[in-house]
Length: 78
Image (tube, rainbow, N blue to C red; front, side, top):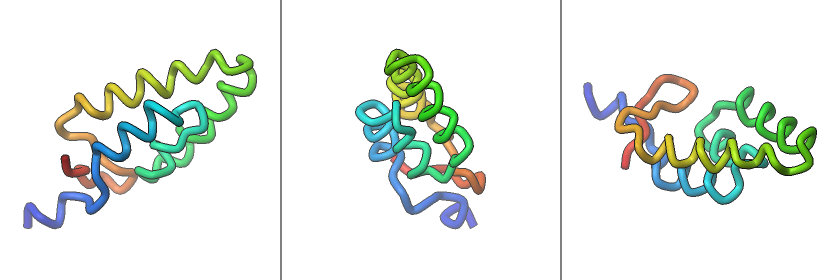
């Protein structure tokens, strides 16, 4: 069913976590994308914080994407 394709966690929470804490990969951990989250942490560390801009942009992209999925491919609801 269509309802089973929608993830229980909210896209809004994911996007906002990513905007405010994206340098630590928090929004990506929330959505289950562990590899991307770890990469965001490493980029932030190795660029002395400048890489946290990636998290900000990523959060905006998440919020603007109507079909953003979690790590299992389920669409996260608005």
